Image (cartoon, rainbow, N blue to C red; front, side):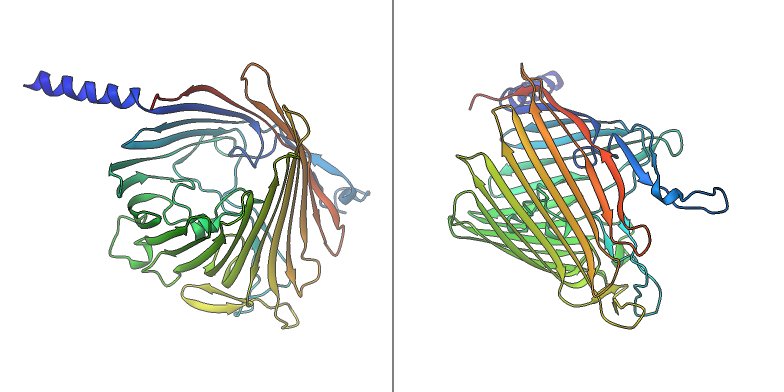
Length: 410
């Protein structure tokens, strides 16, 4: 009997593998947009220290060590089971988020605060190797779909698998946390035609602490060739809960047009009331794609510990964080694509608060199915009172390759 059960399980597993799509992808290099880690090489403006030198060091740049990262990703998809395992290594110290501190910005208590932050990068299951130099992390998920209408998921990172359709930001080519119905933990999905409901537990094992319970909910609905509507409720039992509602058009082919409102937004900056919008259009015949994202506060308030505070400058005037990103690409040939990406963050009403990143790049498709290589130069400018202008420039470089890609015969 035991041998029969084992044999049956083996046959079931073999049949599942035989009818599955499997891919193994590899990304190597140094590119903070495509791999966990920093750009391959970077040069940052020095801070002048009159006590050590007679010259003005703020006109000079110092280089970093070479940063090399590796990402290996296995994707599996069958009728009943799908999942992903991603293993990443970086030889450089990787910060969870990049913040831009604005001088003279205060909260309601009069303390200085970081107003604008870059999008947070998750550090699930990170292992530091050799102290500050190098780290390794493993992320992934698995989902089981017993019937078409029901699905169960488990993992420490669901990536964008549970993103609300209308929360997608085209220039970033991403969905931020406020637009994800589930990000990690346990997820339950119920689907009825074009309506999807998700319940997610992603909190601490100490369920008696309501702030750490991590209960999330979301819904996504579409009227084909018309509109997309979705909503999320994150950390429902916490005083710092987040709520988002999103809508998008689906009437024009090759067009993306999405808008959203978020209460207690913490994706790009902290805001009690924020709005986001994204638009993109692809000119297929010309090989051109253009996209733009905007994220802005609607008031100068933000939430912390359930209390509301205000962003003000040193004169007591209200200030308003603002962020935008524009991206474009052109397929010059079958193998060569030229890209451009510009990001700008600022605080309206505050002097010397603008940071601009300009990133031109090219992507070349290698012959014999060896993947593609992407390289460029990233420039970071800051509108500072002293020594403003170019603060950093770096060289992103990465190679993407899919050595294994198996498609089932369906």
